[in-house]
Image (cartoon, rainbow, N blue to C red; front, top):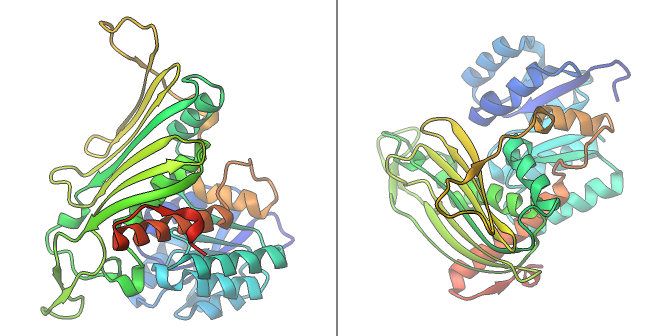
Length: 359
């Protein structure tokens, strides 16, 4: 490990999620510096190098070269899902801490293996369940743990957007089951599953249905059409270990909705509704307590600044042994992967699936 103050980060995959979330977080952190980049796309690599001021000799096409680089202390994995675990295993082999985008992998079996390797070698790690670092979600969790609305009865979560309707969007890896494992289930529902666990719930059983709306898209390298093989929408019913029931509505074909996330909770003492409206960029947290005058408007709460957090900084804190206890390690990743696999089995069999059935 680097003995200097700043952790030297190497990023594998310099696409949309790296540029939109990971890189901005690292650039604003006083505790790290981006020293190497890797991508199979030469143009993406060049753009990333300019943005992060990374010299050509530390811009790689092969992730193995980046991980082996002496100027890299920690690895951030921002690639398509199918290669997450391969890169993580290489990082473990070099005894370097790593962060990996969600979902952790393609199935529970391979993610469990990586978790066991990381545990055995005592390698610090993180999985990027980014909603854990949103102040409203952290504040909501705190209020729930403080008993504000009492024991939970119902959970209703919506995560819908129009990203599948972007004009001209081609058959990228997210639409290919061999590269992604699943569609909105892994891409969007995984975050919602983690929010559910973040507020103190553990999954017991799952029932679900899913479908593909746009079945063909143009291939990336031609005008020929190829088959979409990942889900565009998914509706899920879940039972928690303590008997709480949860309902999820997930879609990338919500016409006119850029991005809408709602977490609606009903408890013994009252209700709580978090809303993120991507059309306006606004967030709200509404509360209504038992005994309130129904004629009055619901109250709105705003999280104090102490609930602010940055995902990239959280990874650096983990590497430095300064985790606040709220970050998501790959242990959370494999639990979520097990729920994803159970959901896929429920869709296939049209039956309720116990999470324990996924081995």
